[in-house]
Length: 258
Image (cartoon, rainbow, N blue to C red):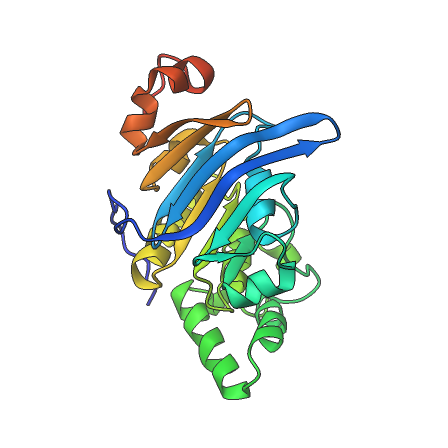
């Protein structure tokens, strides 16, 4: 039986910071992407990031994972300054999981083969690998799909598999890059429930970046709106859509999440 529960957590879990970006500035060539940005991500929080293309949402993911170094500022994870820490150390030491917008699968392998491949990288003990994969298969209701090649899965099934693969290493921070893109309404609802479930049962801090503003706001505790390299609004979904600056620069006057 799946562990997915249909509920909505409306406030995040306290104010214990797990990731902090301090006074971050980033340039690509001579173009400034982020300007003196400060952001805290709290433990067991679902945080959503919204903003126009090129505003720096994916850059924030790259900064957290170490794929991009800031020109100025510091990246603090679990109280440790890891600004200069290599990618592999960040993923293993701080238990970071990343679900990219595209790819993340080996398409000629079956669903179970993809899970096995990742588990062999992260888990040495054979019995522990089996236990972890069995749990994920049950959690995501993969039982009928285990022998199907990844290339033959539906869009929603592929996205579920990539999320499941990111969970093999028991992450404490999960970054989801545009998980709702090009998916139908029912599949989006399914993914929203998975995200909520990860927060409640796995105690994971989840950061979601997407252009589907309504879908994102319906499953996050807090959202930030980025514009011109800065955070122009931060708060609950209702707070950010009511924010005057966010309305002027991103949502418009008619947007709502009802």
